Image 1: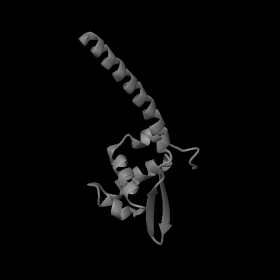
Image 2 (image 1 turned 45 degrees about the vertical axis):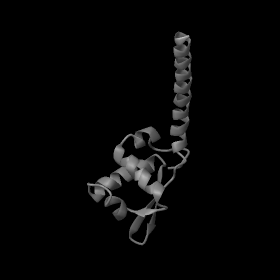
Image 3 (image 1 turned 90 degrees about the horizontal axis):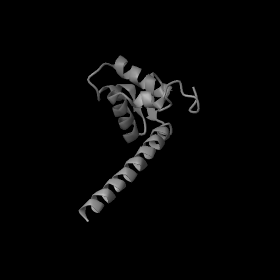
Image 4 (image 1 turned 180 degrees about the vertical axis):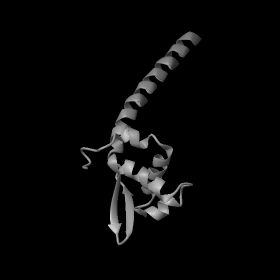
Length: 109
């Protein structure tokens, strides 16, 4: 799996609130082992691991072995696709709100 050819769509990966929380935790830390990530959730290690696998398939999480421990870190570059998509709609709503504001001002006059 490479960053240019993810196995899973980034939008699919961030659709789940648990995975969004994992992304947030990893963004706040340079790197975290699985056991530390698991303590942040009311679910078992296997469930957290499955969520991390989905994030890895989307290229959002990288892992490395340190002895018997697996450490995870965020790779935020795939989130650029989400940001680009959202920026289009941000412009869309800004323009529509500007038009609405103009319309309301014209009605007041």
